[in-house]
Length: 248
Length: 300
Image (cartoon, rainbow over all chains, first blue to last red; front, side):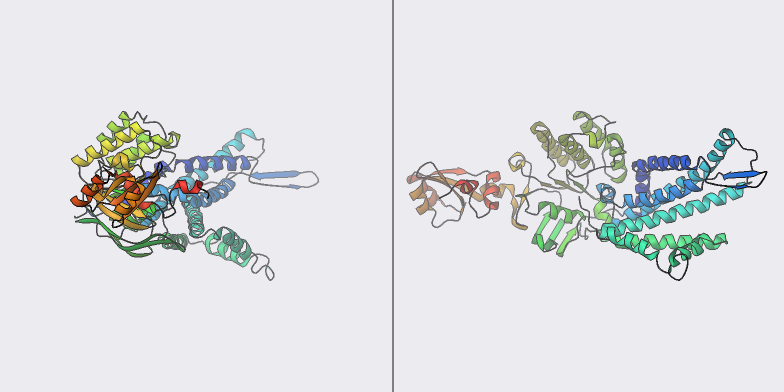
């Protein structure tokens, strides 16, 4: 009996389309967390003041920074969520193997990151509009954002969100591999933050992460670094989960 | 052509072996009943075949491929049990459409007709259904998918007897129109024995018996009568089951290797011979050696 050949890539796209519909809960939680982020930014994301004998200056800045940070958290947690048993078993209701399941998850997380990146950048403008209409202020100093700048900002935000998603996906996969890692991973992460603090002010790991991913000025290098990192994280996840069984 | 081939297949969870050294083959386009007591290893075997579990040792081939992580096997196989929990965001209509997009042979028209017959509503969600309705919906997907290998693991859980009867009938009708390999594991053998062609009987992780239903109906015979006479008569025969009924009377099930002489002798000595249903037979064959449940309550 000859069986028809299965086109892996076509199946991945089918699964991706299926996940865009069936993981609808992700969009709801994204909206919820962005609304919470916006509530936190209502009074300005940073503020300060200077006062002299005759003058006092108080300033507040309005941006999407808080929302973006919350979105990072959302991406991390949502990615852990889709590695859990209930979500993984969903795939096995229909046609799949572990590779296509992982690849379609990757595509889904990328799509979700794009949506999350665009919406979180846009909330910055909402914040500014709210500030303009509802708060009394003497001066408004607006930073001009060119369309190109906006695109670039969105693109970079999307990459960051996707990187957080990839981290979450790896953490979730490792935990699925063995439950003991629920304890081990937080211990390692928190523990590693103390390395170097006796000789330096801040943790070496955090400094390295900030230097590598946060202070890169060349956009090309930055994109390459991000893609490389994300690729490596997913590759690890896929390799780890390739031998996992489907248990109910 | 064999759809499933197992040779010395073993699957262990840690130290415990759920299936041990299994060897059997299942041919194309047969309906096989997988029968065994709770914990006999039926579900484990089916999940190894479906590619959900990794085998521990031995060989397993489905469509002559190793099933674990194999896309071809997955695309040509559907596994239906009562643990299916589809995504909560989709309603029944959308679930059917998703299934249709994944399985090339999916017959949407049949699915729709069954869907209406069992009075489902397209906008319902799977988790709002009752247990029996869930099973019914899963079975509709399993039937309509028309996969060359269709596996039903306890598909009738929670269904009432009318729905069960409808399901058996629908399965048989669709099978006749579109022959394919079907494996059903169930406890309710007496309801399905007229539908099955082959029976694979499992006990403690091993294959006890793999034969056609017709052979199985001839496999054993029941004899009842005076205890003394019976015990003399069964000396040379393989006794599968024995139960005392009333005072001084016994009911035994023996392997059906009787010749005419045996039968005549039994008749002369006043023994009553009757056929054994394959449901009873499977219970006798798979019973453990601890006697019956009656022995639990007998203290002496």
